[in-house]
Image (cartoon, rainbow, N blue to C red):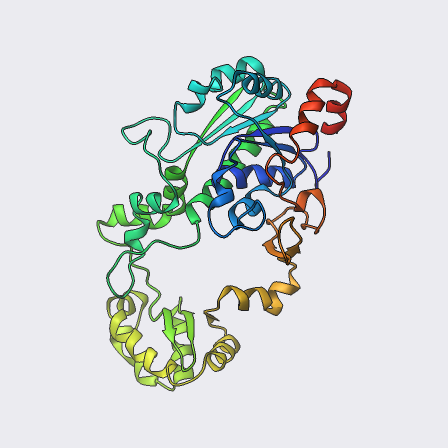
Length: 385
C-alpha cells in the first residue's frame, strides 16, 4: 500500500454502465484497485453514446481508464457461474441496474454477500431503491429536470435549460466514490458486508444543497447579494464578473469612473444592490460592452476584483494556467488517431499515456486472462498484488 496506490490488492467487479458508476470505479482503478469491467456481449451502452473511436466514445474512454474488460452474457447459466466465481474474489461489487434487476439476475446484495461475506456492494440507480419512481429509467437530463436544477437554470429568455456537461452523473460518481472509500476504510475494523445505495437523484439534490435549502426556507428563489455580477458582453466576447463586498463595488465604480453609482444611497449595501440589481447591471453592462474582454480581464484583475473571460474548451485547455498545473494529460487510446485530452482526477497520480491506468480497454479485451486467473489461484494472487 502507498499514498499513490492505496487500493492495491483490492478487486472491484464493475457491472455498471454509462458514466456515473463507471467513473466511480475508474477512480478506484486510479488509486490502484484491480477493476474488472463486466460487459454484456454488445458492450456497455456508453460505447455507442456519441461519435465512435474504435470501440469507444468519449463516455467509455473517460469512464473506463485503467480497467480490464470481460464479456459475460448473464442470460447464460455458464456465464452466470463465471461471474459468481469472479465475485468470490472481489472486495467491491458495483451494479447500475434499475432496482430489482440485479436480484432477478441472481446478483442482488444477499446473493453477492453469500459469495463474498465482506463485500462492499454498490448500487447506482436513477431515483433510488424505493418509492413510486424507483423503477423508472433516468439519465442525467431527467434528474436535472426532476430535482429543480433545470428550472433554476433559466436563461434570459425565461426558458429552463439543462446543463450540457453531465453534472448529475459526474457528481453521482464522486459521491459514490466517497462512500466506497469510507466503506473500505471501515472494513479494517468491521468485516461485515456493506450495501451502498447511491442515486442520481441524491447526488443532484446534494449538488444543489445550498440553493435548494435557501429557496425552500425563504419561499422564493435564492437571492445572492452580489450585484452587479454575472456574465457581461464585451466588445469581442463575454466576461464573468463577481462583486461580493461593498469595497469591491466601490473599486468597480472607480474603474468605470462612475462615482455617482458609488454614492447612490440605493446601492449603499449588498441588500440595496440586490434589490436594484437589474438597473445596476444595465449600467455596468454599457461600460463593459465598449471594450474587449482582455482589457476588462486585465484591469479588473489588477484592481483585485473577481473576474474571468468566458472561454471555450479549446481556450481553456491551451491556457498557461491549465498547463502550469498539469491538469490535462494527452493520452493515446486504441482506435484513436490522436491523443485524448483527459483531466487528471484531483489528488490521484497523473495519467501517463500508454500505462495501464491511462488506457481504456476494448470490449472483452481481458476476458481470457481474467477467466484464466480464476482457474489458476497463483496467477490470481499475483494479479491482485
